[in-house]
Image (cartoon, rainbow, N blue to C red; front, side, top):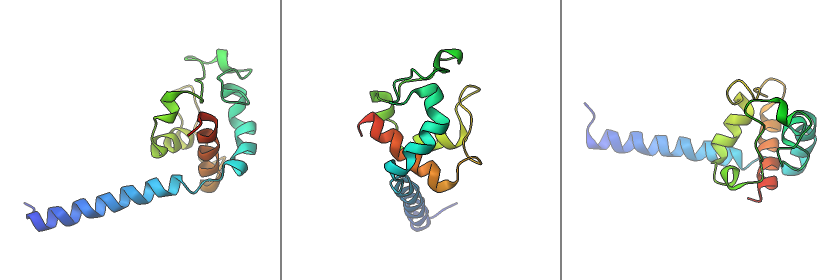
Length: 116
């Protein structure tokens, strides 16, 4: 059983850990993220994130637009997770092909496409 004091400390530590993860997503550079986005993402999501890349309709479900409110409303951590680890069977995981900084940069670039 935890005492209130221990619970408060645990809550504070978890909050700081979450804050650190959130801050990490802000450390990406959209300008640097453009080149890897074009190389790996534009084939499905399109050059401007409109979901109209040459492979967009070949996937099930089709590649989504990255410019809409669903992406703007997504947390940085969730967006980074989707890019790094993939989504379902359709979107591949880019962790391993892209290093951690490149993943942050692509996340920042996608944010710039979504206008957030």
